[in-house]
Length: 158
Image (cartoon, rainbow, N blue to C red; front, side, top):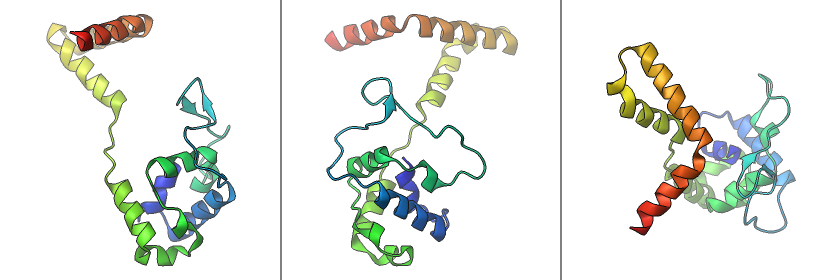
């Protein structure tokens, strides 16, 4: 997802240029249909550099999967070869920026936590008791993941 930073005015121009240069260095010969370097199967979790610290820059996080994001979001890469100062007047950049701005960002983990808390808050007698309930429910959900899959399957069939 690091490629999205190309469209942020909060990222300094020099950093955006370095990010563009890094992307051009790892440009694949063909369009990526799926991410390549992930843990697990399918989409999986991305591989991160072994050490991310305060001196890590966005361009240090670029890899082939950065191009998958570009292809998936239908970002035209032609503007990457131009100086950053010319991007705002470039049609390809403007169209790509609109695609990025249209993204709906959702924090699934936070939303699940809020839903979990609201489901059990009335049963709790104190904040400490609520925390204990949430930990037990979360632990149970981790151990019984197949039950959620079966429930979803049953609900969609009926």
